Length: 136
Image (cartoon, rainbow, N blue to C red):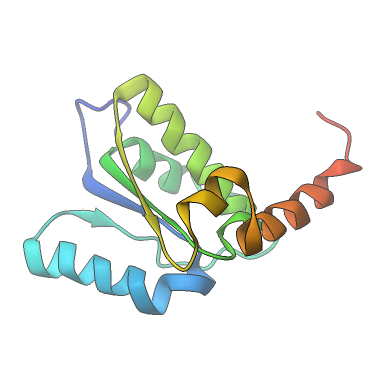
C-alpha cells in the first residue's frame, strides 16, 4: 500500500460514523463519486465491533488517498475508530498535504468546533471512558 502522497491508491477516503450515515448520505455520496464519476473512492464496508482495532489496510487506505472526506454526524465523536481515523487523516494532511473536506451531517460546524450540543455530549461520553485509565 501507499506510503506517501506520490503513490495514491484512492482519490477519496470516506471517514464516517456507520450507524449515523452509512445507509443514507455516505452510501449516496459513494455512489455518486464512484459509480457516477468513476472516482476511486474508499468506503469501509465492515462494521468494527467494540474492542476491534483499526486494520492496517484501513490505515493504509487513509495514507494512500489524495482527499479525505470527514462526515461529522451527531454520534461521530462517540466512536473511537472515527476519531483514530481522523488523527491519521490529520497526520497525512501535515506530512503529505492530503486534502480534507469536512461535511456536517445533522450537526453544525460550530458544535463540532466547540464540542457543543449532541456532538459535544457524545465526545464527553467517550472521554469519560478513558479518564480513569492510566496512559501507556
